[in-house]
Amino acid sequence: MHFDPHRQAWALLSPEKVLWPDEISLAILRRCDGHAQAGAIVRDLAAEYGADEAEVRADVLAFLQDWSDRMVVRL
Image 1: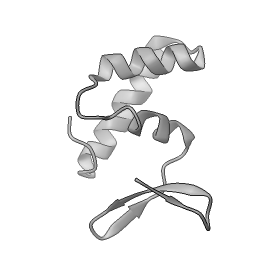
Image 2: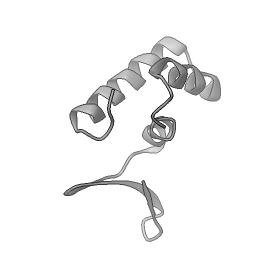
Image 3: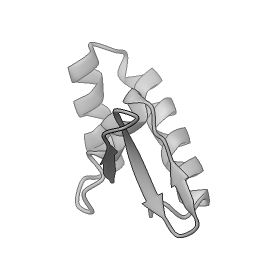
Image 4: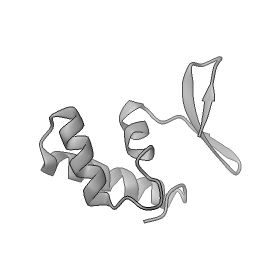
């Protein structure tokens, strides 16, 4: 990940493309450290945002699947 000072935004650089994640995507990506399991990410985000864990789980799993399909994260 790279912070672009001109856009004041984080970018995820990968071969031949740049992805501009939103705030929630960044919150998930920052937790993808190669060790954290999806359940731990869900619990952490639900606690941080005071959100329902089931809703957060659905969103996190959909995000991870989408970004895995793009070959940006590995499940």
